[in-house]
Length: 116
Image 1 (tube, rainbow, N blue to C red):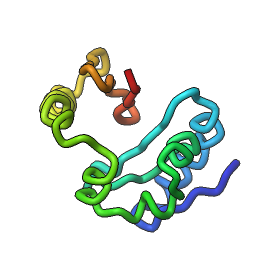
Image 2: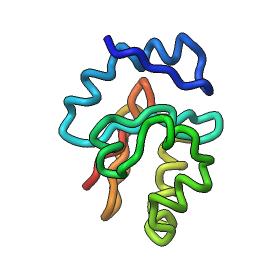
Image 3: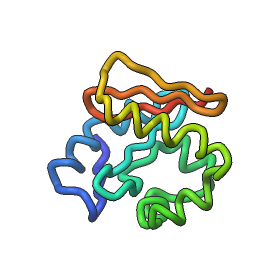
């Protein structure tokens, strides 16, 4: 098991993430876990870190505003942010939101984000 630590999360939360890191890193895509208390990045898989040419410590330390300004297109966000917010509010395990850029699905453990 890979040891994971993020100073913004409880040891229990870090332990839960650590249990799944090898799976996250073997998914042919990018896994991003957000801390929904403040929307910071709690974890990003190796594929995502390599694509963004960053480290886990660097990406987890970015304030939300900096992370979004650096890595997201503001015009695209106008389309998908309201859809994601509504999906989270409805809290349905069976619902998916798709846009021309991203697909989102709520899981019992959080939100899954899939590049379209």
